[in-house]
Amino acid sequence: MSGCTWRRSGRGCAPEGIRCSVVVRVPLFKPYVNERAIDSAAKVLRSGWIGEGPKVKEFERALVERFKFKYVKAVNSGTSAIRLALAMVGVGPGDEVISTAQTCSATNTAILEQFARPVFADVQYMTGNIDPADIERRVTDKTRAILCVHWAGYPCDMDELLAIGVRRSLPIIEDAAHALGATYHGKPIGTISPFTCFSLQAIKTLTTIDGGLLATLRPEDDEEALIRRWFGIHRDARRMRPDGYWFWNQTLPGFKYHMNDVSAAVGLGNLADVDMLLAQRKAQAEWYRGELAGVTGVTLFEQGPDRESAHWLFTLHVERRDEFCMTMRGRGVDASIVHIRNDVHDVFGGRRADLPTLDAYEKTHVSIPLGWWVSLEDAAYVCDCIKAGW
Image 1 (cartoon, helix red, strand yellow):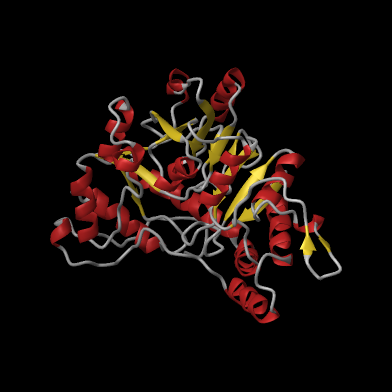
Image 2 (cartoon, helix red, strand yellow):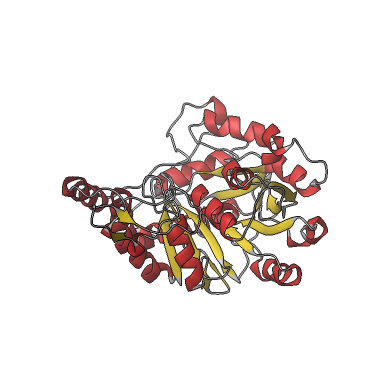
């Protein structure tokens, strides 16, 4: 894909669909690493300083500039960013965090790592996001935070969530693993809630191979994130003793969550292309919406005028979802639910009976290929395969 204007291709799929030979293989995901990132990483590897150092700080400054974060700290994964945020708001043994089951399980294992319990609220059928209307009835005296996930990069109803947080004196933590570059009421995701967690994992729009970010709004939270991400040690507050030992007074427990300079160098290189990648995803999503509107058996997700998705996934509802997935794969098109509802796992206590919308959602949602590797011809082929039926 070389540009941001999508036009209909003449390439098609034979009406007999699954019986036709596979014309093209279109994967659901593919990492993006540019030559600048490769060269930058190689320079760091040759420099002798490959742990956390100047490149991490440079990367953080560049992220603040591009995404208008107030403060941001780079860590080694999006999961680490979530657990760091949970620790910073005081979630601990016996506590509860209201969350969503429609997410990568890493969202909720981070809660378990704090020896707390996720309490699942229902989702919205037309977005996949947590439903604010279902949250307050789940608040107890053990509730310590609300954790929302911007499914596919489409922002949650943040006004409603923040209002609940104010009424109940509960911090809102955003899992924005899908949502780097998204906006809500014109404000970038990462500038709305006190704690926003991003993933820079291999297949994200911006990758550091593995990595994450914790964006905060207050200087004291930024300082605490800095300290906690490296064992609870403030690097800049250390002093060297006469015997050569770096001394510090450790006042907070912490983690080994810091990003290294090699990952930061990859991130800096790829950051140069992030605007192009986001624009491509938006243009392709709009093209898909135009091509698939009104197709029998397909229901497109909600797209409100008050927010802009990061379009990390293109998720839609389809009738007979399993048949759809098998048929598309038979035609060379990857299609997947991406993440299964978390409450089917024993570690979360087993399937819940009080999530009726999620029950409906799980039967019909599916994602189709979207990203820099999907050419105009590939996208047309995907749509023609869908229109051919399943």
